[in-house]
Every structure is written in C-alpha cells, then in structure tokens.
Image 1 (cartoon, one colour):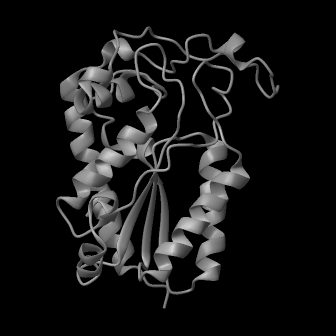
Image 2 (tube, rainbow, N blue to C red; image 1 turned 60 degrees about the horizontal axis):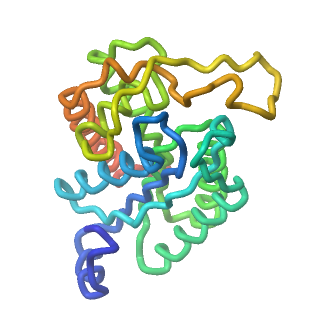
Length: 240
C-alpha cells in the first residue's frame, strides 16, 4: 500500500492486515554526469513499492533529502544537517505510531556514513521512547552490493558506478544520460578537505561502463527478496 495513493479508509483497512511500514530515505545528490540527482531516492522507493506488491506493507512517501558530505561541492547536491535528518525520522515515526504502526523499516538509498549513523542514532532513541515497536535501519546500497556480488565486475564499486547505473538503467532508463567514466576518489587519508571536488572530479566511485540493464533487473529482484526477508524477520522479532 503506497501511502500517497490511498485514502484514509484504505489506510484503516490496511491496518487489519499489517502494522508495518517502510520509510524510504534518499538524497538530492550528484551521481556523475550520467545519472539523476534522485538516484538514491529512486532505488529505495522502487524496491519498497515492489515489496508491497508481494506482502502486506505500507510504503511511506520518500524523504528526498539526506546528509551528503563527500559530494557537497558537486553541482546539484543539496544536503541537510544530521539534526534535521534525525528530527524528520523521529517525527514521522511518532506520527505513524499514533496511527497504529508498530514495525518500522528505515530503508536508505543514500549510503553516506554520517547519514547512516544519524538514522541509526535516531532509531536508537525511538526504540527507547516506544518499547512496543520494532525498528530496523537498512542501507539499500549495502543490500544491492551483497546480494549482487556474484555479477558485479568492479572491485570497490560504489557511487554512480556499475551497480547504481545498472539499477537506474532498469528502473528509469529515460533518466540515464550517456555513459559515465570509471573513477575513484582520491581523498588524502585522515585530512578533512574543504574542496572535496578537487579529489573527486566527476563524482563517480566505480565503473559505470560495466553496467547493463539486465544486471540492474537481477540486482533489483535480489534486493526486493532480501528486503522481504528482513521485514518478515522484524515482524516476528521479540526480545522477551
């Protein structure tokens, strides 16, 4: 059940079948010259929608903004603070809790370390605030990398590379603008730099030339199945 598409009556009826919601988090962030700024959001939201067609599941509208540090100097990236990100998550969970939701899957398409930790920290506060909820924070990219490792050719592929380019080729081929070039960032170890683009010119971390639509389809299907496994596990989880 896609929340932005259903009525309040359909929401009421949906609660008879499930108390679980998936909250997709993404970003407005550069993904090279060939992928859209919404790449992270697209992947998290589309996987959630696919899962909802297979099991009873509410899917909330995505949060399109994230905390983006490494790409903050690249054109098009719009970053929010960790404080704002945490507040958004906590407010959304509190509101859904008041409507009867008890199981929360936080699925982030943006895999930045600071961004992920902010979501985890907020989640830790929420499970203390609401002892009767189950909550998980999953990174969509990590699922894709792990589940698709047998077909991924690029060692260390990450941002806007083989995996993400394949995914968008499959999900939204009209949004892929040409083919990016192989690139890896070269940040100086341990040094915090102001001009991050100096060390990561084109914003690609991997090799998009290895991407194919078929890889995107297979990885997407694998991620959906793994996500469903996590959801079913969380729905049964008990610390008693």
